[in-house]
Image (tube, rainbow, N blue to C red; front, top):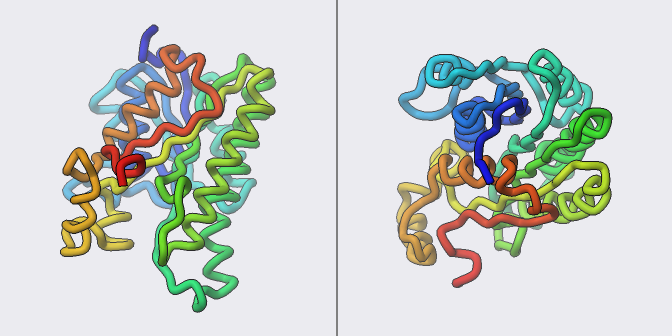
Length: 259
């Protein structure tokens, strides 16, 4: 079966930078048009001043448009899905937008907790809901939720993040059961440490002594690249993944199952 995505239209939240950007460009390279839904159009990736839509236009034969979107607001997420109608309607929803930070559990405030849950879990829930409604009315499709290895096991210092990503994992399984009979496949990707602004700036891991020690637990002995996750997303969205539903695809260099 082919990995090609001709005649598909993807909505990628958090698509301006990092993993979302890589997924957007990879999808376009395989033939999909893309709606890039994000809070800002500019990339946070170092040494990359072009927008994701510009990269798609310059490096592929497909079309892309940017839609400003705060995924914690369901109205904005629905608007991003509706924007896909310009390309024929959404066939693949990638709920990628997320935030990441560490914490001292006993010091977490309600506002801090709610902000992270609103983006990581609520955003995924209502992004999937908006896409599923359109797909059920159309010819079906695929939903890909970005969880994390933190959604597979707990980590000290990241209780809220683990709770949000664990919620994404179980949400994925529930939606696969509910939407599968209606022609919509739902799967989750669980990245490990990926080299993005999230792990170099937001929560510095890569490039630190602690990070160097952490890498020794990764059998592949390298950090993940956004392209590694994008390749997994292309597979799940394509005909090659047609019988993959309600699955967690871990992209972590072997860390989770060997430590």
